[in-house]
Image 1: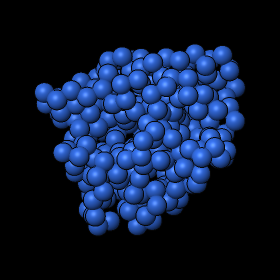
Image 2: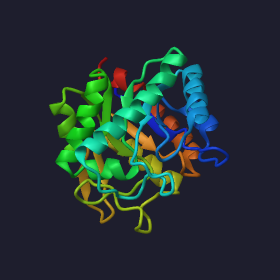
Image 3: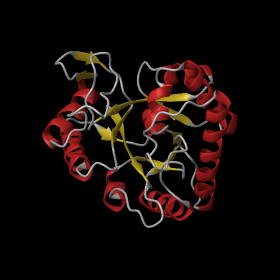
Image 4: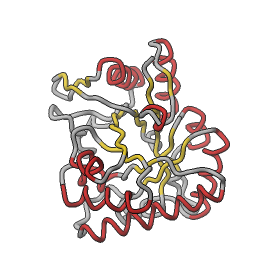
Length: 257
């Protein structure tokens, strides 16, 4: 039977600023990427989000970013490999502490926003991130785009790697995500999002923005937690996956332990 992990970005609120629909999303997920304070999240939000995920049986992961609260981690920043590595180590360590506090083990790391995109094409940045993760816990899973520099760096660092597809984002013909600056890059039509997610799981392909059919092998599907349509997408996607005989499981189960 085909297995797939469903993930979303959670815990991105900060102080009195509320982001996302975490309480409604958590029951629909098998894994969660929890903000670590640099683009969203604060100690109370991190604590509450880990607690809620543990109670629901959702595997927690760290979602580190560039230090960019104002830009929500989506602005490109020119950092040295050492800066990237130590920033990632700092953020993962903070979230791992909250996981221990609630009797859970951190499952994975998925970089957020601009650092995720830059590390997909920049070998030095990708290797710094992967080495930082491995230096803390070589058992952590690195979530990244298929065929990216980050995937190659994860393997080089001895990490398990989970290849990620996006339900709610448009793709370029080369398999990269369409920039959020381009109209139509973020989906709001549930039919389109579910069709794309199901196709990636059952056919290992995605239809690019120009109509090109692109091969895409994935282990996990993401719906962005700050997308107002995320709950509807996940509800319908789970129904479609079940009808296709696909089981939703946390990443470590999908990857074989």
